[in-house]
Length: 98
Image (cartoon, rainbow, N blue to C red; front, side, top):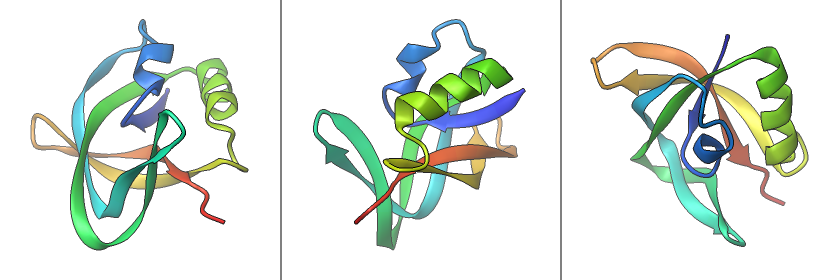
């Protein structure tokens, strides 16, 4: 299984995927790219709330396609805090800034 941290529309794309509430603590912030949220770098530490999704390899390929990886959004592996207090490594899509 592939672990993905979703802070926006990906959660609705995979409604049957196992998921749980989670958060990302990083030097980043949410912005917008059209109607979609876009995670970008920041000089301040922020907490981004979202969902931890467990995707199959096929769903992971679909996720990359939806996110325009690697041209529009780039996958970066980050430590994610789950509601039970544990941390897991998961992929997070960051907006590619020009």
